[in-house]
Image 1 (tube, rainbow, N blue to C red):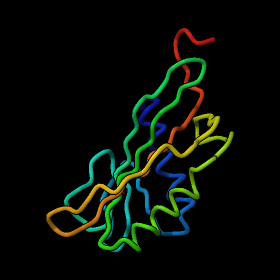
Image 2 (image 1 turned 135 degrees about the horizontal axis):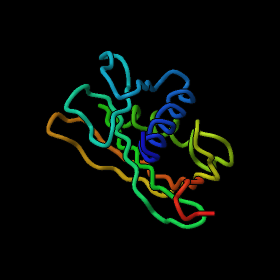
Image 3 (image 1 turned 90 degrees about the vertical axis):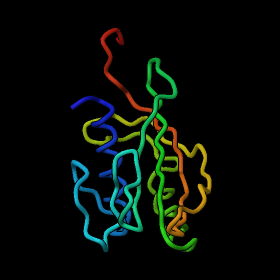
Length: 142
């Protein structure tokens, strides 16, 4: 598995593990029960009504790598979105050095968030974005 996929899975696992049972992760992203708030890769599926999509994108490369981590999440009410956002923020805002198996995390900080509106089914969507800095092994990095 490549480094970016490994990081995505590690972020998804840590998010679910630290959510107090609110969020579920299955590797690779698999089938979730209708009652579970699952984490999917990159794109929100048409169903279920509540879901989280997790995307990563490069921000900087250097001695350390900073990746943008975007959670897009959907629910029926603002109160439920607030609950999801609280769990994401508690897990990732100002997170410092540690290991996201097997990746060495340096720091994670809040970047931005936004309301993404309402879909045709009346479901509300938001995003929460973080900058995650980690050690990434590269060929010419010493």
